[in-house]
Every structure is written in C-alpha cells, then in structure tokens.
Image (tube, rainbow, N blue to C red; front, side):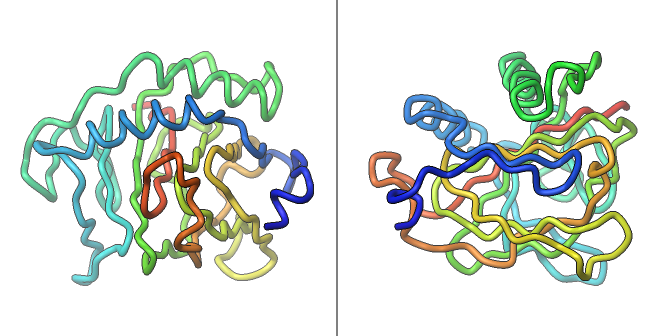
Length: 216
C-alpha cells in the first residue's frame, strides 16, 4: 500500500479545507469505535435515512445532540422510532475543538460548542452523493473523522455538485476539517474500499463521525 511505503502529508485541499492523515492513533480509534457501537444501539440507534421522493441513503446513520433528517434537525428521531436523540458528550466538543486547532489553527476554533454529531456507517456498497452541510445556523468548521475501511472523499466547490473537485483518499484515523470559504462546499463519498480497515480495529466497513455546531 502506498500509505505504508510513503508518509502521507498534511494537505490543504482548498483554502479552509485541510486533510490531516493519521490524526487518531490506534488507541483513540478503538475508543471512538466503542462509543460508536454504543450509540448505534436502539433506541434512537442506527437507521436507514429516507430522502424526499421515497429513496433511501445507502449509508446508515445515527445522530447525537440533535437528530438530522432531510432537511432539518429535531430533538427526537422523527423519521425513525420517535425516541429522544442521544446526548452529545462533552468530550466530543473537546475533540472537535482540538481537531479544528490542529487543522486550521487556533484562530479558527469557534466560541460556540460543538453540539451535533452525525455518525454514518458505510458497508462495501454504500455511497454518499454530493451535498452541502447547510442545515446548521452556524458557520463553524465541520470536523470529519474516519474509522475502518478507506474511501474516496470527493471535495468540491461551493457553487455546483460538478467539477472542479478533488478526490482525497481517507484512511482510518484520518481527520478532514472544512470551514471558512470552504464551509459550504459540496462533498461526497463515491467509493469505499472494502477490506482496507486495520485488522486490529475489528471493524468491517467504514464509520464517518461528523461534528458540527448547530447554532440553533
């Protein structure tokens, strides 16, 4: 694997969007995976998201703090079992703030607290179409953490779902942060690489943990 032969470098994909490889060490990845498995259990657990028009997202999702559904936020799982959404833990806010400081610098850290997490699970066939994270009232940077299988993360522009965009390979433990001029950029996951998760992690598939400031 190229990642094993050559050190991967921190990269600014566009102004405001930074990829930091191997940001989570093995222990931190295991601890975050344990938390994700706990959050995924019902009630208010992992669900299939239905989109307007009757289709479904191939990545399954669980939310913390506030429940996301197309296209808004609620305090209960309004498109699932109706249970109250699981609380957003304080340590995730601290993790999000540290991620922003490491990726974009201390001045980019918001004064408001991170209070929403969207945890998406991708199996080998799951994808995520190009979209913007635009349902929040805050323009604080979005923090994205990867666990398990690697994927192609497509990071685009703020005007259209089409080109120009950049494809970035995200591996387990990687951090991607986007804010400032890149906060409303379209992005998606066109492909997951099955069987690429670190064996020691014990995860089949990919987990993406996205931290946001709601501003609500």
